[in-house]
Image (cartoon, rainbow, N blue to C red; front, side, top):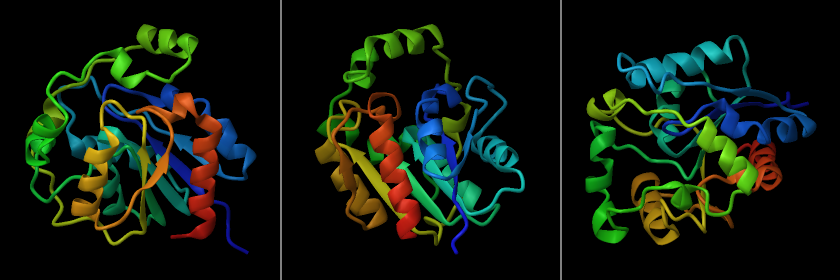
Amino acid sequence: MQPPPTYVLIPGAASDSWYWHLVVPALRERGGDVVAVDLPCEDDSAGLAEYAAAVVEAIGERRNLVLVAHSFGGFTAPLVCERMPVDMVVLVAGMIPAPGEPPGEWWTNNGYEDEVGADVSGFDTFFNDVAPDLTAEARRRELGQSGTPMAAPWPLDGWPDVPTRFLLCSEDRFFPAPFMRRVVRERLGIEPDEIATGHLPMLARPEELAARLAGYAVSGS
């Protein structure tokens, strides 16, 4: 009998484990263990290596790992795969790095400004389908994001040899669907799955997101 998975939930930039607080119980109800990670996003001494170390420390001795990386967390999850055995990576609206690419250059290298535009910031971009009370709480908890991890080249020679799924958010205003479909195909060589929500499905569609993640874990590929 296959042991239950451990879902390791990695937040995006300027985010913390609170963003996953609705998904955690939904995954546990489906029989999995869950680790929601806090990264040192406001620490100017911390780069991607320190982000990966924080994930590894949070995992501890747990195994049967499904790494779930949101947005900027896509730069961290593969580094964890180099440090410990991982059964699957699931990118949720995730940034997909290229070898030697500093995260700060990801936008230019993928043609983001030409295809999407430069002015896509603000809470309306990220929280367009999130309930007002959750949006207000996120504003209250707002974190900063250090530029340190944006500057150094991504250190791997390629994407790790780990089964990978990509969950694209079809109503995402930050990473619009046409843009991300192209990036996923070019950088991972796979077709993304899609969920009808904005950039933050863990807040807008937590039950549906949990069901998708549990389905991936059961399929094993």
